Every structure is written in structure tokens, then in C-alpha cells.
Length: 138
Image (cartoon, rainbow, N blue to C red; front, top):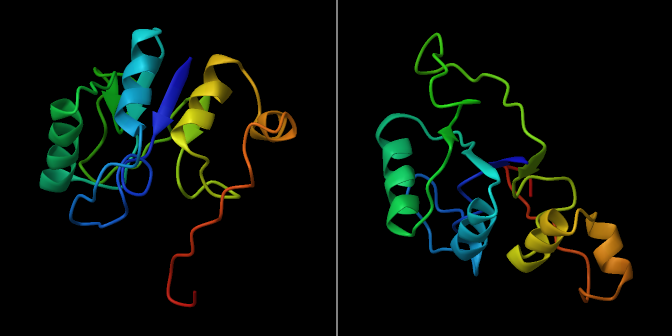
């Protein structure tokens, strides 16, 4: 399975342009998914030096990505500011509609091929994740 993963607010707390603290179990879950042969793509708005810092932070925490901001390592983008469309089976992002569940639930969703609502109905989670508010008017 190809899994595109955001960085700020998903792997680490949202402190952009700084790198926040790791969200609980984010890197351990990503390492488990990679060990199960899923292709992980880092999909972030970070570019240039900020992107290099994020990739290096992940590497130091044992997470290697198949590709970064592109579909495969050899893909050539038109320019550094190009935002191409990522072809992934799953996108893990804190801006998902409804917010982001914890990484334990994310792992179950991927490994058991279940939706969040299925896990919620099983009573495995106490409540729906809170949508994080962002922007000028929240």
C-alpha cells in the first residue's frame, strides 16, 4: 500500500517553521508500517532547507521514506515549487475532515483494512478525534 504522510501536525506537533515534538507513537507506527512493506511518502508543504530538516529529523527517528513530495524517488519535477499530485492509497494528514485519530488507531486502520468508523463502532476508541482549528478566524 502507498501511504502519503504529512509532517507538521501529523508526525510532530504543529510548530511550523520550527519542528515540534513528536506526536505519541508516530515514528514507531511509521517504522512498523515500513517494515510491513508499505511505501511511505512524505507529503508536506515544506521545501528547501525546511524540508531537508524534516527529512533528517525523520531519519534520526528511524523513519526512511520511499519518496519525498513525489510519487517515486526518480520522479523529476518541473521546479522546486512544483506541487504535483501524489498517487497514494491512503493520506495521513491532520487536516483530514474530522481531524486525525491517534497513531494506534491509524495503525489498526491500515493493518486491518478498516475505516475509522468501524473501529469506533467496536468501542476501541472513546470518542471521535477533535478537529484542530487553524487559520485567521478560529
